[in-house]
Image (cartoon, rainbow, N blue to C red; front, side, top):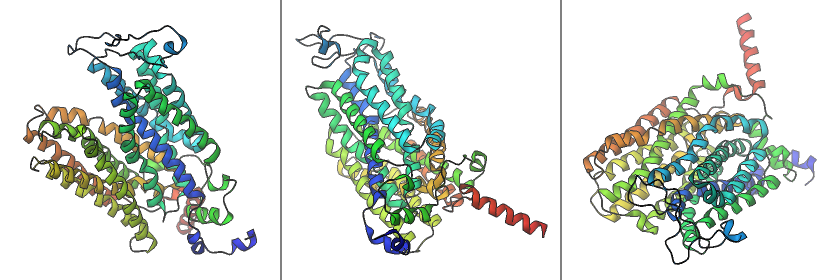
Length: 494
């Protein structure tokens, strides 16, 4: 079909075209997020394989040789670079281990707001390529740096990796804002962010397998380093900031996307207008609940299973993986449902986002309350966890894609703002829960923890229902905003 003919083809006819370059772009984003989230969660397993510390917590010795028949040797080029076994084992105490794990999040938090500005200035391709290339360098040198620089250099490496990973969410959101039409936004957004569940589902067993293999704990970092490097190359050559910049996209698909989104290229970010928009605050409150619930579910619930229910859920790989698998599969259903509601005009975009968020938060809150009273039975417990995860993922089709509804042109800065504030709020979670849980084996104290999290789900979702919106903001398109101002001035002068 030549260009003149294609111009008269309607948008409705294009819907039958199936797989397009927008799907290819989202698949690249999905792979990027899957690898990144798997890297993010691997340190907990890796640090266990790297360390062997005495029960005496006052012991702060940084390094000791393996307690094996073959001692670690520096001699030789491969040994000096920690490329062949036996590998060094560190005697880092629990405090140092927690510091190493936490250092990633220090970097992640510091660059969260600037990352939203960076993606708007330098573009998605450049930012994501730089982020994955930085991870490649850091992860490749980390084993050697850990040996020669001990925990100090390990913290620096993890901190730097956190800085690079802070760019991912703004980059993903900005790309989706330019590539995902509003009636496909639920499916494409949920598919990309489904990398969180897939990364966790695959990352934990892969990390454990590598650490137990001849590659040892250094192999964990080198494996993810190689993946990051490959991903950086793929992003550089195959990912494009907008449909207009893609060299192979058809005229039809480009017009189909741009007629819906009306993208603008790197216009200034209207921060003051963003901060005065009530819909932005509704998203922030909803995201605080999502982050708090996520931390409770994946950090505190395993402790509850162990201390109160006497079920070591981490000891069974199937039990650990099943909620993530169910969550990933449910992701496809909810994303299809929300897009279908919009396409069929059954609900407006605003009501669809509120419906999806409520379908995620209200059942998740009820499930956490039920978890506090469930009998000590592994089948009941696992069923509840699966149901909580299944419904919770529905919120990804609510608040998580709502930034793109309000402002596809500034989706990157918006997600960096809400992500920063929500993580700041969630950083209080361990402190609050530690204050409540004076006895980790007291089931009544655990009920307070679950009631608190359920209350946050209910309260924040109510705020989202009251103030959330799916309408595109006037400031997203300066031309439209100027026309509105001129129209208002004309009415006033008349």
